[in-house]
Length: 106
Image (cartoon, rainbow, N blue to C red; front, side, top):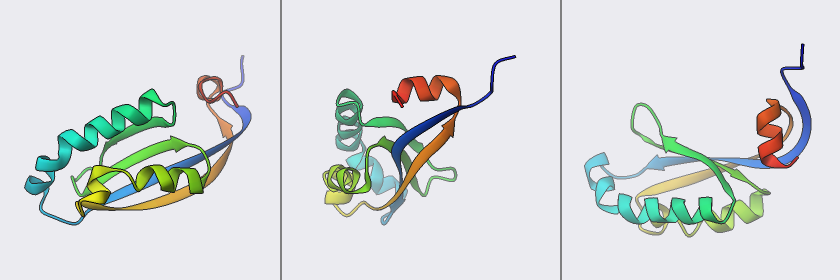
């Protein structure tokens, strides 16, 4: 039986977005935010993204170190327009599911 995990050394960041305005007002800014997300995916730095449940903000998973991710997050239209604040949590993944390790190139 194959191992259910693999060793790796992958710098990652989890970004917690917390909405600062009413969720209905957030929707006005969502198209620009989604375009920003697509660019991050195209640039190979975004691994996953989605809304929190209940809808109080979002969660983003980036590859990279904290300083690089903070610089990217500072350009998010949600952050630039005061829609949300971002908390960047850096960690180094040392174990992950084997397909994830392959995807990370770690």
